[in-house]
Length: 247
Image (tube, rainbow, N blue to C red; front, side, top):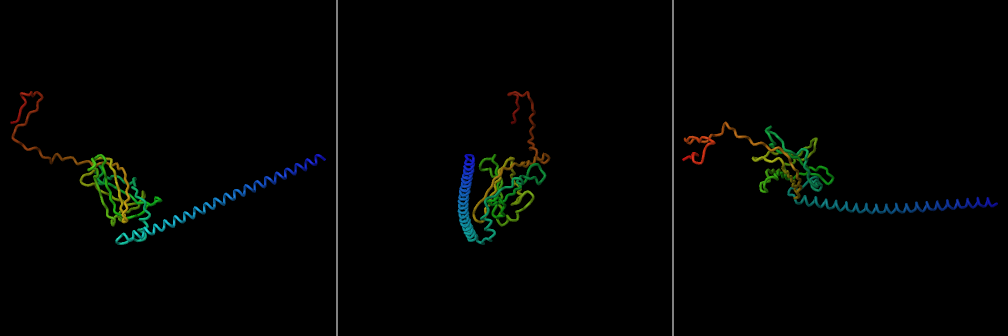
């Protein structure tokens, strides 16, 4: 009799434990559900904030396009104003930018430059504008450091846009002026000025082979004029008293 009661009591306790365990799992699931609902509400709120910010950015972009069109005498096409809004800076193609030897004489007689504007995502943008390229020699005094400068008008820059295996962008072959660089380490500075008045610039350290100056041709060099006087004879035995003096 006592054994039967013990068995009944054991079964009852197991059933109660099972009910309690089941109730605990339900509470846990409900807590997790409430947590996920809160996370979903937070995400929806963040999405609404992003939508508002995007709409505000688009309104500002449209206003900027309108101002650009009004500020330019001939006006801007929609795709041109879009380029102005997108561009974030310019980047020099350091793989292709270098000194080049075109005349097959010792040293680099010209400079090859390629650069391109880019947007916030790093994509290239074919944005026209006035281009200024200058080369500085840091070894020279401050007033003499700018050894070369070239300016390309905005209306002519488009014809210099190229696309090749190693990149795309504005590409120029620029011969040195009458005074080529004398040092091998130079500083290249590129500036792009679009029609909206902004300026984008980039700098790169160049290492070139300076051109070798032509040696003087001894066959065409003139000899000093003859004065009719006998030349002095060199000797290591002259003393102060015997040293000859021209009169």
